[in-house]
Image (cartoon, rainbow, N blue to C red; front, side, top):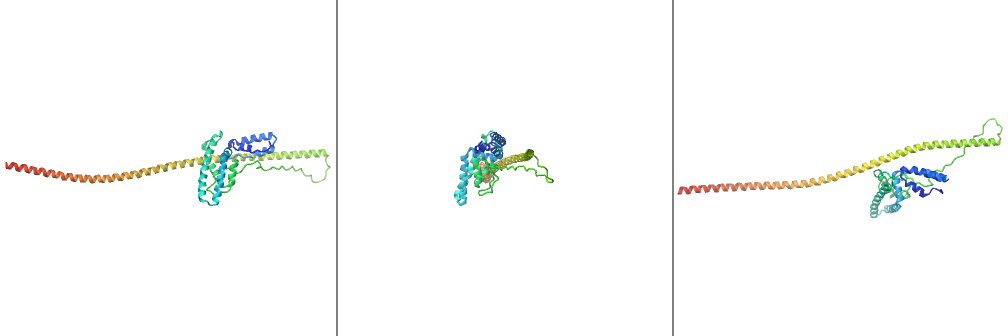
Length: 327
């Protein structure tokens, strides 16, 4: 293997996080079988990304043209902000929201196409969105997003310059060079001089001492490696647990917001119906009062007509009585 290739690193960083370590170790073993210890060491130092960082890497690897559009828009947005061009800044800010929303939707689709990706309900899309937003305010973040080798997500609050996020760009040169110091040979015993050993015995003793020192150094490195592996496993378990808690809390927040929106919509509808009912009640009161006045007038008129009928009947009775007396 001629060296750590970008294609191999890209292949590893589009692997889901729960399979990353196994894929990396397999690549390390292959490099060692090919007689390339330098590449094996570089591969062994590649670190597993978080789920959010993996999703951003997957977007950069699968859809590089979309990420390139994001970086180009980020440059234009930062330029408009520096020049204080209000209308242009508002236009680009609207484009930024649309682009980030579209990219998050694309990330969701890409994750759904991956056979070993986490379920949709556990995707940290809020962290993905925060990282994409951070790329609009920080050139370094934008370049790391485009490279597709993130280890951690970035955070963003409002438009403008933000502090450097806790991200790392993984490259083949990002390893600490180990330098093994030769084992110190035991110093000559102080005291009375002794007869010099024969040359063959001296060389044999020096070789034995060197081998013993090398064994001790290997044992110490192995011990340190085991301790670091234990710490790494614990840290990764804590990280995964924290990410799961964050995903659950984000889902609960989203569900709570949806419930609140629904209640506010219901409340608005009830307020509208109340206003309509109050108007109907007001009209009904006016109609009742008008009907009461009409009833009063009708009763008065009926009384007057009834009195007139009674008076007419009395006159007719008097007239009939007078006619009988005349006969």
